Length: 228
Image (cartoon, rainbow, N blue to C red):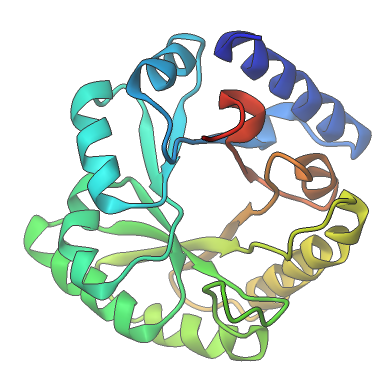
C-alpha cells in the first residue's frame, strides 16, 4: 500500500476509536513519526494531508525540515540532550519529551533571545524503564511547578511511552494512569500550566490510547511501513 493509502486507513481507525469513546475524531491529532523515513515518503504523506511530523533526532530533523518545508508542524519526540536545546528551540513547534529541570532550564534560556514561548509536554516514565526517558510520576507535579515559573516555556500536557506489548490491552493501564495523572495536575490549578494534551499511543496500540483520552498519537510504521 502507498503512504497515502496507509494514512487514510490510520485516519479511519482513529475516527472509529474516537467515536467508540464518545469523542470527536477532530479531538485526536496524528503525529507522523518520520525517524529514518526518506524525504520523498514524508512529502507523500504531507501531500495526503498529514499536518504534524515527529522527529527523534535534531540533526536528522534539520535536514528534513529544510527539504520538506514549513507547511507542517514539527514535534520533537526523542530524548533531547541539553546541548541540543539551542537547535531544538529554532526547529520545533513543540517539544514532547521534557523530563528534567536541567533540560527545561536550557530550553527556556535558549528561547529567551528568540522572543518565543516554546510549547512543551512533560514526559512521564510510568513503568520505570531505565531505557526510556521521563520523570517518575511521583515527582511529576513538583517538576511542573518548577518549570511553570519559566517565562519562555508553556506546559501543554503529558506524554508517555509504555513498555512494548504484543497485546495493546496490556498498554491500556499505562494510558489510563497518564490520564488520571493529568487530571490530578489540572485540579491543582497551577498558574500557566495547561493539561490539554495527552501524547500516548503508537502504531500498535493507538486505538486503546484514544479510548483512554489521547489527544496526540505518534504513528510511524502504520503510515510509512517497516523501517529498514
